[in-house]
Length: 563
Image 1 (tube, rainbow, N blue to C red):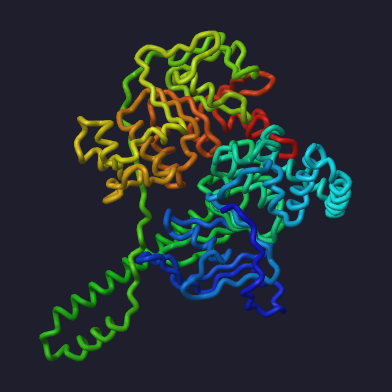
Image 2 (cartoon, rainbow, N blue to C red; image 1 turned 90 degrees about the vertical axis):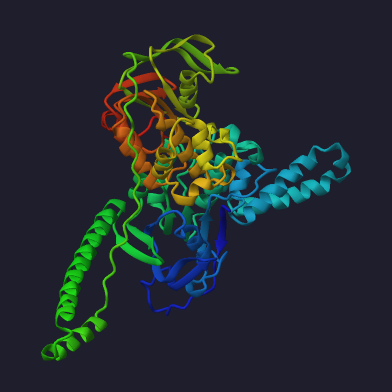
């Protein structure tokens, strides 16, 4: 649950150690069922340090967060936290929210403010309630007391700060003041995140804070965390986001916690270098062992060499064996060549589209040619998803025409695509249903490319996580390749490994692309055109996202002031 905790126990460090970590795990061991997550693992985070936590899915990242907050206990070892240290914990499970505004829900995390604000709202309603007219004097007196206390605590300034944080996360005034219970899951997550940010605790634990954020909100959050002075431990599947914030990486690797200085790029270099060194060490030892074993086998029957043979047997017994380095699982997907389309792939002429009284497009003209890769940028509500829906045919223009060119075969990925999976089908049955003519071998290979290996393919779709559903939908869309890909936030639920695989595959894609993404690595790697949607109008840029940033001096249109 998105929450804040004050953790005041478990401190075992000597007070004279001024540079001690604010947060430390000492020789932690933890087992969930048959799975061993940690074996005598240790790490520490100091005040002001910003640390990225990495490891494959299921390695124990969330469990580590839960042990720090006391929601789970280690089987052995100690969680050591500075006395009085406040910790804000944001997770993907935000819990139930309803019956108050988004602003009130955010202020909920800051102690007495919330209770006072709630009572003020209740008293304000009572003042105009005819049934309570006889008690008006008492209500007014109580309101004066509560309001005075609220002002003493600088509550009105807190309200303004809460609105500032929510605006940074792309909330409109209407959405701030509306019932938080009516918001979608993604927007509720933003409320839970805003609660932690407003609190500004001594330490923050952020589990995938970049999920469900648009590009503008992501850039705002990045700037906020850069200036945050407390200790930060976070996970994120967004590489660019992590790299710009963290100065240290802690990797969960086969039960150990291994610390690297630097960002993710430096971590990758150091890890690769370490693997090379371990491989070389392993090979040298294997060559030496083979030589010794060969000598023993050759001379063990000769009495003249008995002493030498015995000496070498004892030597082998004492040698500490170097383990072969574990290979990281890598997935790879290669497109078959799609059929060639005509040169004009998408054509929008004089397109008008609005929702109610709110116009989105007024006279939009837009042409996409073969092999162009357009990324669509714009603030929340600018019409990015609407454009993709117009092209995909899932919504119609109010006026004007949307044309799809000759021999165009479209693949459309939208967030609702994942809701269309049959929950009772297994992953493999879903693939067979989509491609009944394909053999089992190619479909199992396809499943493996998208992270479903071995018995995973027998999982029913109803138990899949958001990331797993996204991977399955992506696999079905790309197996029989279209020549036009229309993608709405395709990386939203994907882990770094799958993202890298998808980027590598799409770089070699021979067709045309139109896509929306908040992942700057994805945007930079795959776009060669930019369509920018702003309140002042629609702008088209030749060159990809990196050229757009260089030309405009900004990473996204519609950035919030100061962000």
